[in-house]
Image (tube, rainbow, N blue to C red; front, side):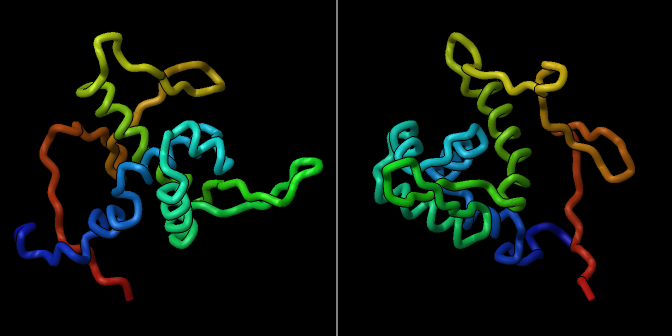
Length: 152
């Protein structure tokens, strides 16, 4: 069976892109991973229109990627901050892969603006392809897509 024979609507990449394939959504996720959790802080840091941010956050909440958590500053009304759910945290390698690609192919003349480090040792973090047998896979090398066995 060839790739073109598979139903592209059932593809997990297509399904994931429906949820996180928008540029603003990716940037919202980036900021959430970096600790920006409150609506006003997200809007200010991203420079995004409030109505666009509202829609992106609502979609992420609806998809189970982000949860709204209430908080109340002293003397203020209740507000919400946004936190990644386990499904949201599972997107970290996706964002790190995008960061690596951007660093390699879109960095400005001064180079990449940030480096992601392992907090315990300070070494840079990178995404690595590895098969379940433990082999490191060359990201530019050949791979094969085959139909998955149906789940009983």
